[in-house]
Length: 152
Image (cartoon, rainbow, N blue to C red; front, side, top):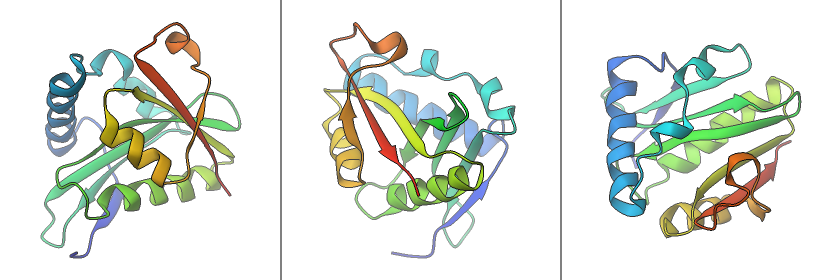
């Protein structure tokens, strides 16, 4: 795998928009919903939120990820996506987000995905996330599955 750089970037940039649109198209194909209603770009401009883009050695945007504040110790993972599956880009994004979240004082990540999105479920299980009861707007959604991970 070539060198991947993870960089905090503007979530309204052209590359960010392109990646999030690709993610929305993928989610719509898998789940029937784009996920756009679960992401508010304004949340990313909070000083305790972060949006990152993964770039290859040529500067090409190959993935993205973000977190937003839920409370003083909990952040929610949003908009995780990689153009190339199975080569470690997602793990590098998650690792970077964990380090940055820890620096900001967070001790836990939470997130939601859909049960039908088995690739995402497997990814989060593989990266140390454990299933939790559905939270927030997902409480009564039988299609949703929620996870958490304590970060150190």
